Image (cartoon, rainbow over all chains, first blue to last red; front, side, top):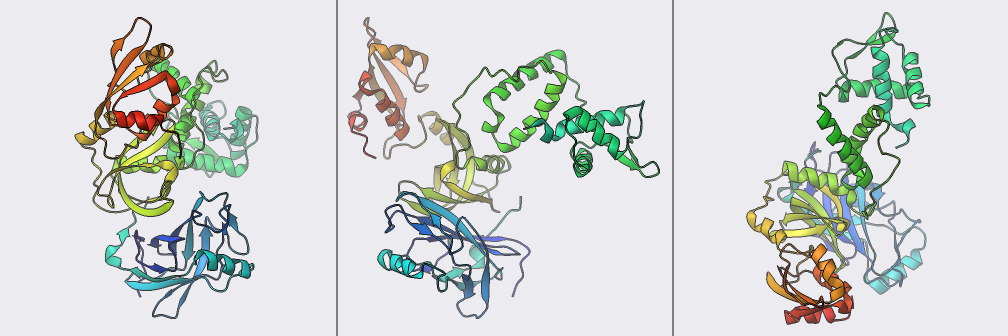
Length: 153
Length: 326
């Protein structure tokens, strides 16, 4: 496995999410972490005020054919459950990033899994059944040839 | 910035103390006392140590620590901390410009510029304490702290150094996020809002993105494709505002204006193409514009209500008169 000293950005990553909300926008493979950017829009939320979002601290990345789980290290723009980031309306949106342990800078197919939710599980499941929203992402295809090297400031 | 937190006042105090030939080789305690005298505030020991380090790095100050005497000194007597040779007329015009910038607010331009201006203003206040800093005599309507303005410095550098940028963009109309690679060409302010005009790889054409809709811009490697050609320059000369109305090329627009608006249109032409084609004795007038119609133009024309009437084109008359539904 290659340990990278440079940072690579995948601007548009083919993947199979259960819905397109949230949308997986970009992935950055850096020496110390892997950053995954998401966008969430309240446009079709089941809640009249747009509802809320959160992420389980147990969320992980894993190669589809591998066993190692790359742990979630940090999150920006979204609260760790049981806390929630609340929206104000059906015209709201949120950009957020999840930082996982560094994955190798080479071709691979990954999945991002949010395991059993912490707290408010029934509420989350009910909301997701109605809206069809789900966080898990599968078949995230990273092709190093399609990556762009990040220019350090 | 409160005077107690302004490092430049301390730098000046340290510089002045190091130059004092009556009391050479000041200790760290002497320098702290000199700063306290200048600012009426006793800085922490660590702060002054950092100040000395910053003076060495940022201002090339030849400050050395004399270990035998446990004191500081300049090793080069010719070094001038604020030495820039200017004529009196240069100083006067700079004074005027500084007071103007102080009035409009340097933060309107960028964080980096504000930081640089703080250095200049501190030196100026010290040199010309009679300057008009307390008296505000210009007020602008620049909005403060709006979303995305923090990207100004990054895009400025991207244009200057020709660096492509990866952005995440949120479309207000489509309620959708997208990831884009853009090649920034021009920073544009309109109606107190900032925009970046850039070649978008995904669209394969020049697009305009509002700062408020951009998230997490990142410099990336790659060939730069953001050269602003003559077509792009003339495009921006031919449009009022930012977002053109789809499928509408540059065209003539005739507008009848009522007498009460005549003075306004004379004083503040909407666009450089504006011409008066008729002015009646009563004050009624007709103007002609030649431009690319935009959403901002429609919004402006609507704001005049019944005091203006679009003569042609018909589609624009319909657009302006239609109720504002969105």
